Image: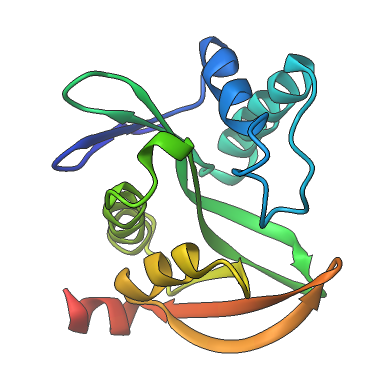
Length: 177
């Protein structure tokens, strides 16, 4: 996987050495407030997640990246693109996503890395469309998607909540860039 740098961040592949930082983030109930309220309980769950993302790199040529703060090399969270096959019925697509440690919320890191992920998807992977979903009550995530150029398409039921569905095409991205 290619490493990407933004003004303040480094995005790189998931490594097994990321397990402790990922566990600390994903064990935080606030981080999981809009993700089904199921924070991880054991580090083995995170190790399985790391393996799953690494498998996505092999099979799909893309998967989420670890986000590090460039100046300190501190763990911020993860973000990027993923080939998604299970969220929407009978519809596979490239999904933009992110999850940050609570200490980094509200500082523009999610938007900065989301924009870099879109650029990578459209210029390096040649994607025509990128989608994203957010819990309808997650105003922070919805704002990140809008600031990154995605447009609201529709709402849909998912698990026990309503999700908002967003989209951006390569043509829309190029016009906005």
